[in-house]
Structure formats: structure tokens, C-alpha cells
Length: 457
Image (cartoon, rainbow, N blue to C red; front, side, top):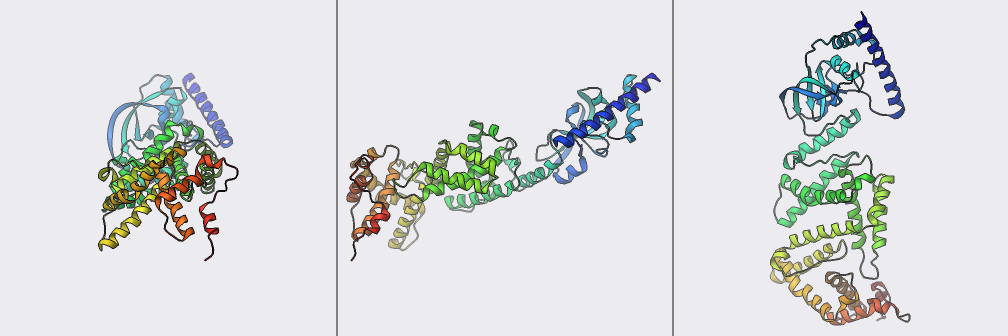
């Protein structure tokens, strides 16, 4: 009788604990319900199952039930009286130190669901046990489930599972974790992969299989950016966000930053701070406001994002043009994002002229090599002979090549006559040299000003 009374008192204490846990969950919004196995199974695709045999399982990882998920809370405390008799009998057996058979569990990820033995699990947790003997069947799934997963998480898990099923990344890169907490991110990732597939096909001159594009995108685009996020421990500043969430935002920032730089035409127009401010403003418009502004503020006050963009753009440029193979001595580097696209435009124009002269299409790598020999290198040699780069220590020969080409075009249009590269370079240096800018009597003329000042016919 004394044991039965102790067990009854234990139940009353357990159900009172469950009541107060429910109140606290209402006030704090914390999860307090068990995961229903059937709902998880419907949302998450199953890849197979196998028996793990008899195991000792941590009780804190048992957070779901196959059929009794409404009878207990997240801590497996009883939530109503209809479980009372069974619960008291199990507790009394514990008090008498009677043998109780192992429970039966289903394992998915790091989460366990009770198939048989809900009351035994409940009593064991109430008595402060850390482990319980269980026969375990493991169901393999493509996405991670943890004891912190709740019903609201399942929709995101379902979306992630669909993404993995489409891309095969769980098979192609088993260690990859691309979970996102922000809705809609997987559609964005698929767009990125599709664009990468197209760009890779353009670069290789052939059709690229989707699986090849997926691995190339992960290795060359996604992972370098995530690695930068880890090196700078950015996630610490963005609680509730994942690496994939930050990747999507940073790619948007990269894009806007490249556009901001690409619009610049002369050294006087280029302002790194203005470009970063514009990119940050665009990011804040497209992403959730408070955190997006915080991220934009972090990256615009550092140079690592620009350096990452430059490295990626240069790799793509050299691979697409094959200049590393055809002209291994070439050292084409820009100091500003977006400039390699302008170089590609120059190569495209040179390729068109070659095709017109030849009467046949010219391969891109051949056109790039010809452009390097007959357009780029001659102007770079003038830059070197006149020592122009000495006046722009933070810029590169490729930067000056682009500026000089556009400056020469403006001069030719202004004077309505051909201007030699040498003369254009000399006047460019006179116009834009930082030393000359210190002369108060000097009046600079930008390209637009040159055209405005053009003499009447």
C-alpha cells in the first residue's frame, strides 16, 4: 500500500509539473509538444530502414511518439488523468525494483519516437534517469532532425528534403549542410544553380549536366563564401540564421556591389565608399530589414567581400578565355569588382571584328589571345613606358587599360579625329594624376564634360 501511495504521489507531482511547463510555454513560446511520428514521416522522405538492435538511448533525445504524442508533453510528463493508472503501475514496478522490458523506439536523425513503452519513458524521465534500454529501428532520412526540432521546423525540413532530392547534394557532398531558416531560400539556391549551369556551359562550350553543375556550384560558389563566413564567425552576430541564409544575402550584396562598380568609368568617378553604400542600400531593400542592414553594415566596412568577388571573377574570366593556357605570361588583374565583364565585352567586340574579316566564327579562346596580343598588351606597354601606374598605386594595369580605352574614345569624339594611344595616355595622366589634382588652377574635365565642351561645327 505504501508503494502504491508513493507512486500515486509521484504521478500527482508529474502532472503538476506538466501543468506549469504548459503555462511557461504559453508565456515564452517555447516548444512543449511531442513530435507526432506520422506527421514527420509524411513530410520527410524516407530512404530506408534497418534494425540497430538493443541500445542504451539518451532519454533527452526521445521527443516523439508513434501513437501517444497527445498524452505527454515534450519532457514526457503526463498531461491528463487518463494515463494515471498505467503510469502509477509502471512507477510502482520501478519502486519494487521489478524488471521492465526494454522499450521500442524508432530513430530518425538524432530524434527517437516511442513505438512501445511511452509510460516507461515517462516514469524513467520523472525519476531522473539519463538512459533507457531500447530496441531501436533506424529510418534513414536526407535531412537532420535534432531534439530541438518542433512542428514549425518540419515545413523547413520538408523544403530542404525536396531541395536535396532535386540536387542530390546529400549524395554528392555528404558533409554539406545547406539548411535555411528563412522561407524561400531553396528556390533562390536552385536559381543560382541553374544560372551556374548556363554559365558553365558557356565557358566550356558544351551542355553541362545538372549534377555536374550542382557540384561545381557548391565547390566554386557556395563553399568559398560559407568558408569566409566561418573564418569571420559571422553567424555569432546573427542568431537564428544559418550559413545558407547568410550566403543568399551576401550573394545579393555581391551582385549589387559589382553593379555599382561596373557603372563607373573614370578614376575620378570611382568611390569605393559610394559603391558599398549603394550595395548596402539595395540589400536592405531586398532582404529582411533589421538583420540585412546589420549585415550590410558589417561587410561594407571591410574589404574581404571585395577580395572574394575579385578572386571569383578573375578565376571565371581566365577560365572562360583560357588565357592562362594560351598566354601563361598574362597577369590580368583588376582592383575593382565588375571590371572583368567589361574586359569580356572588349574581347567580344574584338571577336566580332575577327569574324567579319575571316568570314567565319572565331573561337572565344583564339579571339581572347588575339585581343591580348593586339589590343591589351600594346596599351599596357604604353602604360609601362610612361610610368602611368606609378601615379595610381592602388590600381592595376587592367584598370588603367579600361580607363584609357574609354578616355581615348571620348577624346576622339570630342576632337572628331583619331587620337593615338600614346597621346591619349599622356593627356589621361595630365587629367587624372593625383599630383595634378593638387594644383588649384587646374580644371579637370570628365568624359561628359569633354562632350559638352565640344566645339560647334
